[in-house]
Each structure stands twice: as structure tokens, then as C-alpha cells.
Image (tube, rainbow, N blue to C red):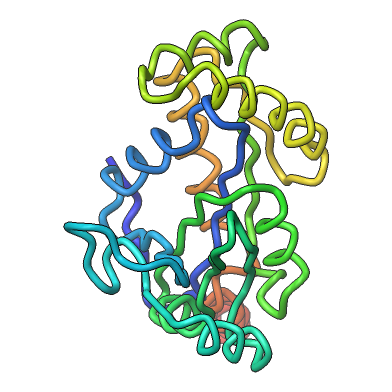
Amino acid sequence: MTMLQTANRRGLLLILSSPSGAGKSTLARRLTGWDPSLRFSVSATTRPPREGEAEGREYYFRQRDEFLAMVAAGEMLEHAEVFGNFYGSPRSPVEAAMAEGRDTLFDIDWQGGQQIRNSALGRDVVSIFVLPPSIPELERRLRGRGQDSDAVIEGRMAKSRDEISHWAEYDYVLVNDDLDRTFANLTTILEAERLRRDRQPGLSDLVRGLNTEFDTR
């Protein structure tokens, strides 16, 4: 059962990162099913829409000059160029969700996570890195997808070493040796972070009220 979010607290930014095949996308999908109020961050991109993709659902589609203008104006929490196209996380939808007390989930790599942690919203970030239990298991999972060629898999494996080297930059690290157990740990982290003292703005008023009750006994 989920712990319902409340509008009397500031929403947080939950970052999930991992090497390809370690399970972060599966965990992200489970997490949004576990708590439907959790907002999944929709990225902006300069690549054209593919068949079946809708504006604001898969991506926010922007022209290259418009995207770069958003970056220059500080309207992107993070961005990167991938194979000639830009991708990034628009800031305004995240801030709107935070003001409503809703949390935003980011399924991004370590570079994007680093940019968000270094942004003006960095104090609201909770970052989690997902590790595979072993490198052979990571490769087995990649091959088990049946989606990529041997060359693509080798490229992903080569990139994984660099990605894993950034594990110590994260607040929490989960070893995904059992998906159900890892997901249970993930929800425990989120519930605990929502209960942090500095994320409960009503506590100060409550304590003042309690002290007043002491004085009137």
C-alpha cells in the first residue's frame, strides 16, 4: 500500500540511475504503479516524433534553437546531446509538481543526476543508484531482452563500467539481485524520505501548539 502524498509538504525529486540492464526502468514503472500520484518526468527532445508518440506524453518535442534557448534561460534541470539530438528535463513542470506536494521521478544517467543535484533544486533531490549483482548477470539480462545486436550489447557493457564508477555519488545504492526485494527497499526509502523533518513544514506549528498546551495545564 502506498503512503499518500500530502499538499502541505514540498515535493521531492527522486533520481534513479543504473547501467543499462540493471533494472532501473522496471523499478520506475513499478514505482509509478505503486503510487499513481508520483509524477514521471517527461523529457524534452529535439528529435522528431516517432509514429504513435504524443506531445507531453513520451516527450516534449522542441526545435533545436528553442531547446538551446531554454537551456540558456535556465529552464532545463539537466540536458545532454545524444547521437546528434538534445534531451533534457524541463524545470517548470517539476517546480509545479513540487508546489503541489507531488514527487517527481527521474529515470536518468549519472550525468543528468549530477546536473540536477547541482541545480537550484538540489536540496530536494533523493538519488538512488541500482547495481547489478554481477557483470555476467548484467550481460545475461541485456541479452535476455532480445532487442539489441551483439555490437549494441557490447557497447552497453563497455559503457557500464564508467556508469558504475559513479555509485558513490548517490544517497542510496541498491543491489538488484531480487527484483521484489529491491522494489520493497525502494519504496521504504521513498516513504522514509517523505517523513524527514525538513519535509514536514507543519511540525513547527504543531510543536508550538504543544508548548502552549504545557503552559496552560
